[in-house]
Amino acid sequence: MREGSIVEIDEGALANAAALLGTSGWSDTINAALREIGRIRRRVEAFELLGEIGARGDFDDFLDKRSYRR
Image (cartoon, rainbow, N blue to C red; front, side, top):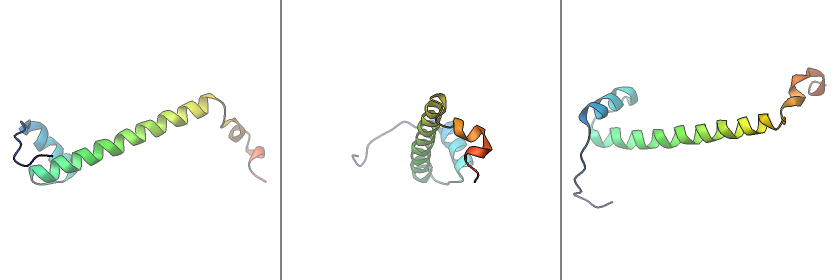
């Protein structure tokens, strides 16, 4: 990233993000928001994968407790 770059920031969105993330200062807030969106996206992808696995029936053995409790 180039130092001294000018970026327009929505101050209302920044304030809202800071309140939600518990951060202060624009740099801390922006960096925390970028990390959080990455974590959220990875969770969404994991849930989508679990949905696909479930749709294939890979969890069906767990419907009958006798099949996994011995």
